[in-house]
Length: 503
Image (cartoon, rainbow, N blue to C red):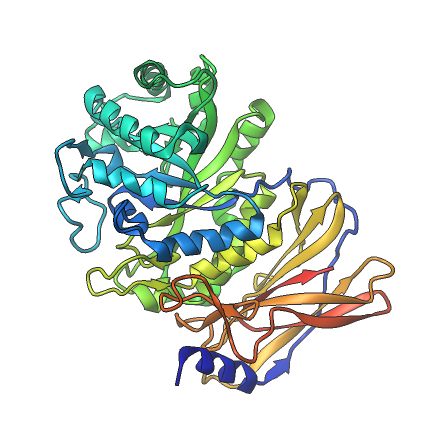
């Protein structure tokens, strides 16, 4: 029996038991406190440096599977994604102009690694995703300008200035002292001075155009005093008009012993993780609103790193990804780059066969699709969180030209196949006068919250077998229509499902 048929039959066979209803307090006009305009690049990705060639391929062997998955997201927002290439093993990497292989030594098992050497073929991958924009992490940890110039030149030449979003100098500089790359006492003032000097030097060495073309900070998920957006900017890092964006890294930690419902599948858990960054977000918005604020490397990890399917690649992570992205958008984050790497379990897809893992689309990818469709192709889209006072429900209102156009709702209630009928909750949505029906797209998995490989979005599924282009699931429709009665639409959402309601 094919996977598509299994998805279809299971979706048709699972009955739904209706639970308590929820009435959403929706504003028909964009409310005060809604986000700024959302950029089409918002639901983007980052690639661990040592995995870059696996995701993109090279000139002779492009990875079309990855390219198609990127296109499926870009087509929904109508604009290019911005992909960041870098991380610890890029910051500590070396360049060998005579090396025939993209990267040596080959990646071995899990882990990040810090002793990789890139060759010219490595950089050919930038040409394989036409139209996509790029951020490249120039090595800074070892302060080897010759090596940094080699890598930056190879990156810029293959990306092209027209597709270069930014150069990023270094990675997680707040960890440099701990890693032995800088002496004790190295803080925001020392970093700001070093960074400005390095950026000025790169502009001259590469012949870059004048103006802001750099992404800075790149602070780690655990960044603590004395490093913060305020301390670094107070130290003068913006002197010289070089800074285009700031990047903060964020990983949410999931303790598998406490269960899905209290961590991965819990709206309050998502909010608490991102709210810790509010001092940085609010400082930048208040004092440097022209500088983009980016979550340049994001993801989640567990206390069981080996549990790739049991805790990281499961369908619940699709719901978490959608909620994480939408809540970040509501906080005025310009872009989120969700981390990709062939050794990680939490990623949106594995690009090649590696270390016993097969190339596949994983559940988090579907969260990107939902968010991309929610943003849509409008260049005048804003988002606002809808308060529900319920840990197991997340809801967001989307506005175009200041009018309510879409509502995203996540029902986090854990349901597993074999645990009985799938319960559903009814969500009552007030809609504008004259609207007679709404259309609904659904993110679901026939296997429930804790499995991978049975997901579908809007009646389609993306797999390695269909080369990442997506195909229709028999028996599932892209949209379902819900009638409006008395100015309200009653939308049923199954446990461990999410929807977009188009008004």
